[in-house]
Image (cartoon, rainbow, N blue to C red; front, side):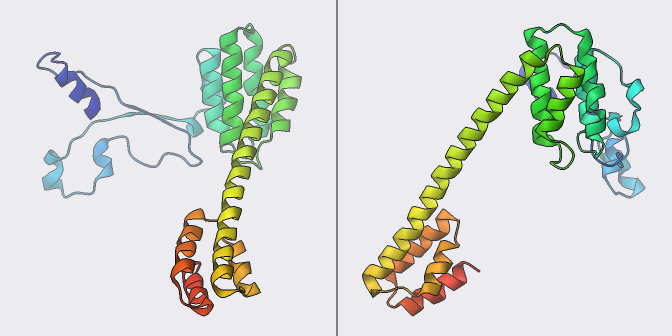
Length: 237
């Protein structure tokens, strides 16, 4: 609200500020506990009340609305129902009700993109024990069978590609870490001929590249393998 008023002032839109109707859309696991006024966020003696900015905000608490009370366009209703159930254990049971809303819509590109976005939201935000890709696939096959051919291939392909990219990045990261481990061990062997097996084990258990970088610098400077062992034990604690 302050940013809007600042922008309004910079644009020289007149001497009076615009009225803003603030709204909070809430869909946490528990019911909204805070009051509906800005002053409810403060603890203050009554004598200070006139010095605290105050306004009332509108609240939409998903947990307080029955499904039939959520009205509006199909995509709005689907989005609000998804938000309502995303953190709940019974999300899987309500998935068919959400997907069935799209039966009355034609398979336009916008609708398909919205459904794809919704599926991504489910996969990324829902607790893993509440929902799986297979649950989503089964719900689409059952409740959106006429659109399945358009939805699932693009979703599956994009997820596979994302998995490949993630796997590639993880592989590169592991390669960097392994090379850093070997650099530390090679440096110690070059300076002190042999490295105790216990020290090699400690080095191979380190997964942080920055820690391995520090240890490599220490390996260059220490005067004995026992000194390095002491430093390494302190660092990796």
